[in-house]
Structure formats: structure tokens, C-alpha cells
Length: 578
Image (cartoon, rainbow, N blue to C red; front, side, top):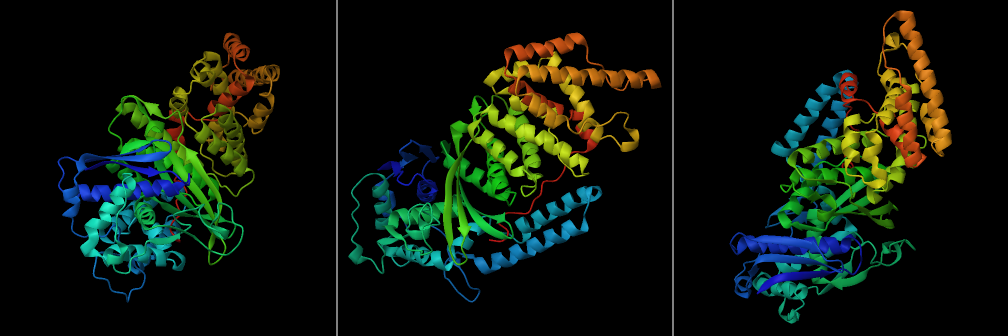
């Protein structure tokens, strides 16, 4: 009987992950074909290996009775080619992809501007419906497009034919795979098989650090030589890649490189993993390197929450380790791996109820919109995005501080040039910081003095920016964000700066009230200011300053609704050109 299987980690890259998922695809298919009673399949990262558990066990007799089935779809690369099995029609998919891209471009041209945003949203929704219900575009087109390239197709075809040309020996082939991962001796008489390839080249697309020359983790030449690997491992990797890999184009200047992305789960049931990955691939956005990393991680965690049914004691990192991300530089005919990394799941995504889960979904949506509206090619945006990515993967508040100081200044800089920037919402920040125990953030942001100082900053900056010019009664303080960052380096400097700022704020407020007989904004009282100063005696000034930058340049829910800040994220699909 077969119940537990091990996929040993040898590479430490997504190569191991897709191999495990490929084996899971095979086990799941056999579970369904052998009509097991209420089968379950679990994949768990055990550190040195992935453990796959089939419940109930698969019996040897059930394997021996298996009829042939393909382990993955064959890909037809030419419209004139014929094939007698179910296949992936790449030419047709390419035509549909181009048609969809053309419709999207026309929609953006037709519904240009904020006043037509709702019409654009409805049109995009209709386009999505068309290519889901009427002209289905396979979500795995990006990977099949890579499989079909001349460099990769030969190995794909050899491994496909190992099974296709040996249908009568199919049970023996499956038993060999099971024995290989169950640590049993593999007994297979290759001489009895037709045109069987026992070893094949370990291709870069599945093995980013296992090649020679350009196939090494860091390229050392343009030659695309490869290292041999076993037919079992490489077959599983192809199957896993076709269901769990994402190939994204990233724009660098006027050309495009590619990021290969694979979600890495800690422990989850097979169907849940499959659904999360599929939902993730359908919702990807962004097409520049840093934004792709950040948006992928945010979107993947959003899909994880939306697909979970277990709310009590939920912690994202207990299910999802993170994302494997490999950067491939385009060299013309070939690609060279120049960076291999894994983006860790944030440590602070956790909740205990369905309502809290919904809050996190809305919060992640807001973060996706904010990051999606940052132009990576503009000014010092790279600096801010690096800080945000580091914050997500490390969960360290110091990285958030670097990001939010940059973003507050970015918001005001854009406003000064009549360009849009999407502020955070105060209610979202409250939820965002709820699970962060570092520096007792909740104690700082609930302090009445802190809230009143943040109110004064907000009323001097972003609130005024969303007020029509002819209705503004006070001057916008454009340099406030930069000064706040500089003064936050020490408690005395921050205290002095806030004292001067509040004095000016109160004087302007009182002057307007005296002149016009109406009060438009509240003064900050001495006791409130004293409460704020008390925070500087207990917490690092950089932490307090960063939280002021977070809340002082955010909008209240009422202000956000009035301003209509639901801007649409830049949504060019980053697999569109693949």
C-alpha cells in the first residue's frame, strides 16, 4: 500500500516545490480514478523534504488495474498539427489572448478619465466574462507558452512520449514513480519499453540553478548546456509547473525580462492549494520588477484568506510559506537566471473570525491599489517600494517606517504637481496595526494626544488637497512630510517640531474663527499635546514619527468616501505578452 511520499529538497528553489505539486497532481488523479472513499491529499513542508499523504492508502492492486491517462496535456504548437488526445491548443489560445488585449486597449482609450471610471469598470467586467464563458483563455497559457519554446519542447515531448508510447506498461510506470517517492527500490525493465528516455536534460525553466553556463544561478556564459536528471523527477516538475507556476513579463526600460513565480505552502490540503494558485493566477497585476513582487505577495495572501473556511486561530504563515521568485534576463534567444529568492509571507496576517477575515481582504485590496498606483520608474519610487517589500517579507516595523516616510512625501509631491496619489484610510491602518506587537503600536495610536496631532497634520495636508481650491480656507503644508521625517530622528527635535507646528495650526484656526465667526477645525489643547509628549518618553521617536506619517497623511473613512479614492489599479496583465 502507498500512503506517504517524500519529495526530498535538493535545490532549495521552486524546483523542489513544483516536483512536489506534480506528484500531488498524479496522486489526486489516481485517487479519483480508483474511487477511494472520501479521499484527502495533504502536502506539508517538513524542512528537508515535502511530505505528501494520501488518505486512504492507495493499494498495489489499484495501481495494477489503472488504464493509461496523460500526466499532463500535450501542447500543439502549430495549427496544422493533429493529435489524437486531449491537447492544449497554443495557436488558438494565442489568438484569443491577442483579441482580449485589443479589447482592453480599446476600452482604456474609449473610457479615459475619472468621470468614465465606472463605465470602464463595467466594460472590463464584460471582457472578463467573455473570455471566461465564451472564449475561454486557459490561466496556464503563460507556462505552456514557455514549454512550447524550442529550448524546452524537446524534453517535454520525450517525457510525454514515455507514457504515450508505452500505454500497456502504464501501471509499471506509475508504480516506479510511487516507489521512487516512497523510498522503495525502483524496478523497471527499460528494455521492454518503446523509445523510453530514462534521463533527460534538467531545463532551466524547471531547475533555475541546475544548469551550466546561463543555466546557473548566476549566468557565466551564453551557452545553454544542461545537466541530466531522472525521468521521474522531470516529469513531476513539468506537471507541477503547468498547474502551480506563473511566468510574468516585467518591463525594464523598453524591453521585457521574465519572473518565474511559484507559491510555496507550509501545510494545506491539495484542493485548497490548487484553488488558491488558480485564483492567484487569474488576479495578477503589475509589470515592473518591484511592484510584481509586492503585488504577487499581497494578491496571493488575499486569495488565501478568500478561499479559507477555517477562521479560528488563522495565521497565514502557518499555511503559506511565501513565494519563490526567480528573475530571468532576456538575452535574445535565451534567458539567463540572475536572481533567485523567496518572498516570505507576512507574520502579522492572523484573525479569529469571519468578520476579521473580511477586514483583512479589504485591507489587502487597499494595499494592492496603493502599490499598483505607484510608478516604479518615477523619481525615488524604487527606494519606497524596496522598503515596503522588505516590510512585507520581514514584518519589521523599521521597514514600514522607511516606506511610510517616503510615501507621505510622495503623496504631497504628487499633489503639488496635480498628480494623483492614493492615501491610506485611517480605519484600515487601525486593522493593519492591530496584530503588530512591536513597540506596543496599539497603545501609541490609541493615545488621545497622538490622535489629535495626527488630526492636525491631516487637516493641514491631505484633507485640504481633497477640498476644491475655491473652498480652501487654509494653506496646504507641502513640506510637512519631509520635515517630519527629519525631525523624527530624535525625541527633542520631534517634540520641538510638533510644538511649533501645533502652535501655528492653533493660531491659524483661531484667526479664521475670529475673522469669520465659524469654526472649521478643532484646536489642539495643552493637555492633549502633553499626552503626545508623554509618548516620546516611552517610545523611540522614529516609531512615533512614522506612525504620525501613517495617520497624518491618511484619510478618515468619511473623507475617503467624499474624495472618491477608489482609484483603479494600473491593470496591464504581466503575462499578456508571453
